[in-house]
Length: 279
Image (cartoon, rainbow, N blue to C red; front, side, top):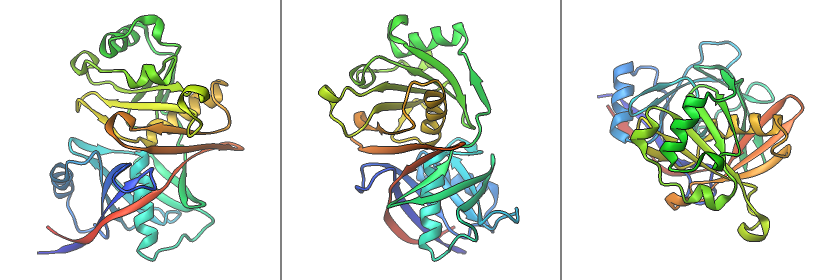
């Protein structure tokens, strides 16, 4: 049976077991779509990725991203975690940035100190959230309509819609009714209050994957969409840190920075498991 180099890493944290885990298969060109999907169901992580030879001459590698329920065109923590694995395997970029090829096209990744950061891809859908969707969110989050201070579609592939609440405490107190939320992929954000919450981050984020009825620990694609919305609307500064995963016992930290026309989403990655996978 064929064997493949395999790693499991923790993304958006410098502390093992405190971020978002990711399974990565290296040199996966020989695997079929069905086998990739089956492995993603077996690992049962939010995402499992497969490093492949690029099809585009501009790319350094190609990445396929699977959840237990299907393939995604893009996701943030798989992008950073897979690039970490690719670099640690002895590879290097041919340009100033690593160029990843995936379902949304080419994604640039750069080193940022001890962190890697990706350039947020263009939003596929943005704009105002429809009244019926907002009503669904209110019911699903078990909150009053006035608790939502702002809202926006911020879909960069997974289908995110987002709302802003008034405080970190409001976000941490949420206990969603997942059936009421239906198949929404919902991000919730609120500002930290430095006097009450400290200065380790500027915002608290939670990500609800409603068709899976669970919460994602730390979410790069969501934070990318949030940054494009909030910075563009003047609701966030050009650089900030977001905290995510607190309710789940994680300490995710997402570093956001706008540089000219790009918004970069960064974080640390640590390797937890390394070995061989037999399929």
